Length: 261
Ligand code: ADP
Image 1 (tube, rainbow, N blue to C red):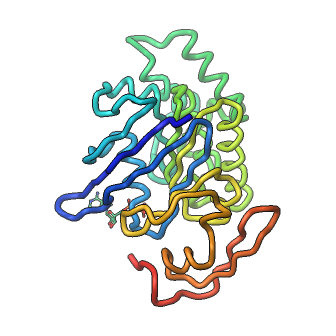
Image 2 (cartoon, rainbow, N blue to C red; image 1 turned 120 degrees about the vertical axis):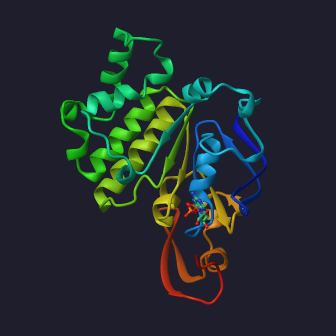
């Protein structure tokens, strides 16, 4: 079933057009990755879906236009996970995750909210960190706490902006496995901007490939991650191998085609 339908979405900061007439569908319970070179509009699209930015065109959530919904109503449906490096929070892990309950809290925190926070910490195996300062955590731990904060919101959609940037291999896998199992277990949809094509290939159901603010192609990792598409979109000559049924990209050299930003 379709969760989000994006129709003719256009957005520009000041005069320049950054997203140009995008049409995208996000299905229930799928991991959809937004890929494309730097500056192709991935983060801007995530912010448009979260209504941090106000684009032209329409975004429908379960058939209802987002523009007609109150901010609190949207916050109950859509959880936003920013890059951990851009989120300095001077508070404990528990309180950070409790902040995710804000769209559900009227004027005071209930036992239900506290239980929900504890349950979410356990789900992500973060309970031992509950009383630690967020600022003192490692990059991988911070990213998981920010996912927990969004999850405590009980959203139908998780939006993630580069969830694996600045993480080592083990923590990249840990975060991606967490996202993919949440999607399967809770039936939520995850939409993420991601640079690493090999991680995107391994953990995504579908990809949207952006080039200069337009949708270049939509499809499964096997359909999209061809040597030709990578050359057209990134300006990179690469070899694409098949590993465990998924494309595995080995970049060889930059070419004159593609996009440089
Ligand atoms: P990506 O996430 O694919 O790297 P972004 O969405 O961050 O791309 O950026 C798309 C384009 O929008 C870039 O050209 C970038 O310079 C521009 N841009 C991003 N944020 C702003 C801003 N706050 N003001 C003006 N231009 C911006």
